[in-house]
Image 1 (tube, rainbow, N blue to C red):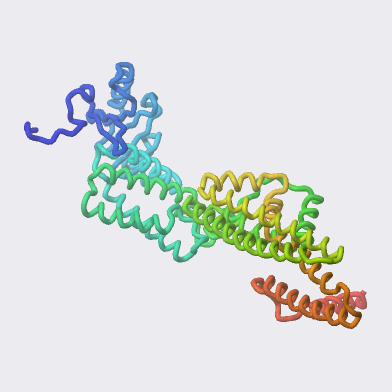
Image 2 (cartoon, rainbow, N blue to C red):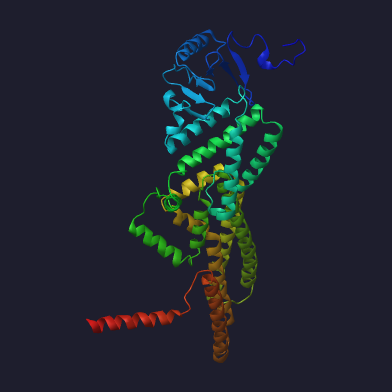
Length: 452
């Protein structure tokens, strides 16, 4: 080397003991290589005691007959009897030297080869500086990322790939540029190792190359419906929650229960969970904001009704109930908006979903609490309607009473029909009316009775 050669930090004469070469990871930490004995250590061999252990490790590696392209990585002070053997020729690593030599890799089972590749690329992630980046890694990473990108188009939100669609796009662009311009840089090798480590971890968990298409489909169905480890509720508690949901809460908690379950789905990558959680919080904030606005208007109308002189006792009681319900809807809605907006990050969502699932009432009880703003608003509307009807029927003749009551019933039937229709229109329904089903059920019962 000439005097004018650019001096890298690792080439300075006082940073590594004799026989060792220091290498720097792109993140800044250092490790050492003994090229004579093909040994790599992470411990600080500038310390005499650590250097003594590293030299003993090299002595043991000298008896292993490591071929060109193979290395032994000392794990946390262990000796050669328990270390990671790395084969750069086949991109495999393992703890049994005989299984990772060039001639033995072909005899590995598929599951063993996937594990060996995962260990290798994990090793490259933290030791990328002393060897050029493996060229076959670019083609493997590119093929895997393109496959995941295609899965996102095919399966949409049901995709379980380890990288999101946006991550696939960014990584593919980076790898394309790196392969053409800078494939020898340590940072490129570290990133490539990180990508392929996750790829082979996903393949190992996904039984890659080991099952047929139908078997893989069955496996995915099992994974998509994992067992629920939430505390089991008693039959009495389930019946009580069912009663609350469908009677005083008008079935509204069912919508929020579906929202919570959708937000808690984890399909292999945090980006998907982050997207689900952000959509969940944004939808809640929008709905609660609308409910707060409606409750405010309704409260103003209720206060205006109470200011009228000589209103009856029934009208006054109903109006006060409407005002209390509107105030409750506004108060709970404002608090829910504040809390969900301030905790829109993924770590907060994990805590939130864990506590919701493991509470005494479970997800159903949590959905009941989430539905408080709209439920209180509905009760406020019901009470205000009763107050308005009581005021309209106050001090009028019998004929006018019947006319007023008839108009009220007409509006009530129309409102009920609209609410029922648009509550069920998004659920698949038979073309037969409900009463036809009832008649057919009665007919079947009569036929079975006569047959007996």
